[in-house]
Length: 155
Image (tube, rainbow, N blue to C red):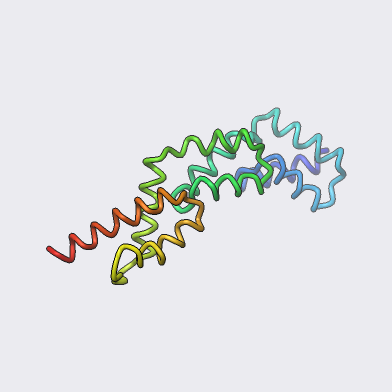
């Protein structure tokens, strides 16, 4: 177990991992399943591994560029239980989602000149939608950016 535990500690020291990720990485490095299970159990006991904290940190780090749908999918791919993932994504409140989506629309639209709101929605809005934001949030963000750009042009 010492070999898998040491390898697990080195991996966790680099960045946080979910239990699933760490199990997979240790397995790929050739450690026996029993040794991996014991190492993961010990790391959980020492509080170096916590799927809930991992999920919350992941949402905090990625919420500037990803919406709740994409965040849930990313957490599921990292082996996080659905209830833990939902709890972490709940911390990403609607106002923060709208602010993040608006910043993304502004960045993706850049200095391009759009003929109308619909063109902005079809171009930048489609990209923001693919990043996991809800259609309503994307429409509201595009509307806010469109209104700001038309007000700036008129002034």
